[in-house]
Length: 252
Image 1 (cartoon, rainbow, N blue to C red):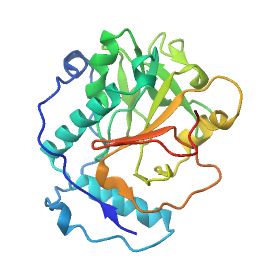
Image 2: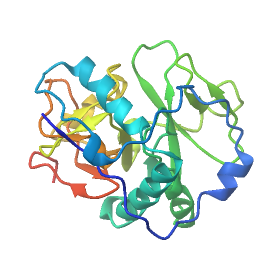
Image 3: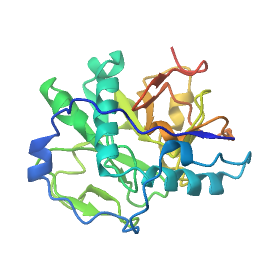
């Protein structure tokens, strides 16, 4: 098994979501890893062939942390350009995304563009009293943010009205999901908690409304083959900073 890792080419910069970055309180980030030395992509040793998902997570998470701040910024801008071309996002009225942690590719440069189109943006929140499930809460510039039990930033449900502003997963038009790894067949590797799999399990039904599920990741998180589990939610697309993958088993 090998990992293809290439730093994104320099590109003109998109404008960051200024209103959100200036006005939304952001607690301290989740991780404080020591700075890793930057490596060229050709120095990345191939991964051994293995079905060990835990080891694979550790390796891929470390690889994405090797990207320095400039490479991360360029990758996020390139990702936004790729996403802006997709029909499901161009016609969406309700889009869920995430705030990046631990080297995840950053989807927030897309936020200003979504707001300009009148699209509402939602963030995942750990569902109270129910294990391994998510709510999706409308995210606005004045949304108060807190750290959940995993030290991940999310909207504060204690704030008046936040629970009312949540939307059922089936009513979302698009969900952008962070990936730890992915392959050409559309198989995904998440963090291992099963939050998205359990919350979006209904999406495998043949009938009824469902969002378009789009996994996003750095290009260097692609591997030749991923072990697949029956409970893994199938993605409609995978978008990296370099390309768009449409798996053969995706929903039409």
